[in-house]
Image 1 (cartoon, rainbow, N blue to C red):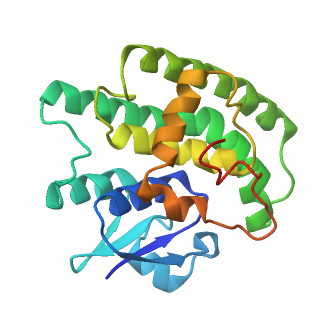
Image 2: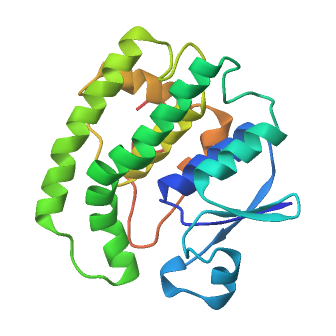
Image 3: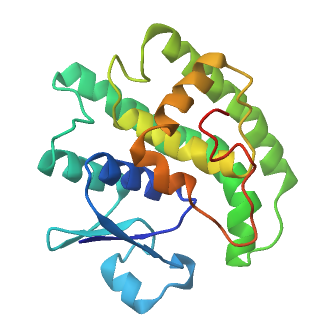
Length: 221
């Protein structure tokens, strides 16, 4: 069985978990306190961060590389289109959420509210929280614009771009930091992806000291 060293609310770990679940790859989840810099974990990934996946006799790090490996070795059901220009668009949007969205939103809301407490780094920086709360509105509006032109974020089929976005938004939804009333299109998109069997373990996550809102696991939110 595959083994994933992860943190429940990490969007990068969630993206890998969604890919594995969609491909019906059974995986053992091992919570890793990566900030403690355990020597055994550093041997698995000298970068000292999650996710780390043990699969096919290999130990792999970096969520983008892991997801591409999963796609190449388990192509069904596909999470990447066949045409190069469509694959580019998926990669562009994965990069958007894992880089720009992460920097402007996730790191300023989730990391300030949750990670600092879990890792003992102190209290949230109110300036960062306010900046993240402002920035997420722009990103939700951009998603709404994409969905006005497409069935899914990158095109007419669900792809890894949808999983990357859902990974970040689901982690933020756990701490009630997503205004689902801002865009009906985005809410409908999330309802579709949230209802997939691959999402079940994500909705079952529990983080000690942080209770999710009642709507978090509600498919009809």
